Length: 229
Image (cartoon, rainbow, N blue to C red):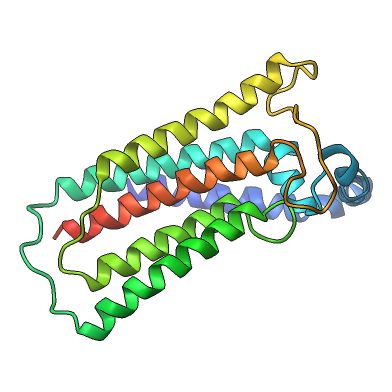
């Protein structure tokens, strides 16, 4: 097994090195790559209505890749949860926590939750989006879990939110596919007023479902790790 893993790592390193040196072997390739970036910067605002060009790339231009990343995160969370369930019984007791930590975590959680929602809602205007916003929300749950002896964590609710968010992501893509554009994740909503919260068509909706999915998955992972030995 170690030989197989070593071979895969070596093959990945060789492939990565080949992509880096591709511009030296093919003189015109570097110019082609730079022109792609300039073309996206010049067209993204008019085509997507997003003030953040990175968001245009992540959500629309390479939306299939983002869907793959969400799927990978789901599989990783599922694997961790299954592994943690098989490691032993739940913890009977955790380390005693001080009153300051308990109180501070409960005061900090609403602020972290609101900040995560802000990052999600403004992902098409400034750096942020569904992934970092979901991580921030999950970090708030993580702080609560670390500083509390017992937490009323609704695993069923988290599973439902995670599933609905994933289906919503695919549903938005299918609506674009069946619409006039005939393209998966086609931006079928009005672009709105540029550089405002209500703009960029379906991009804020995609980031919202991604943020819910990421936050629910990572929160479930943290809870599973806390409950295991």
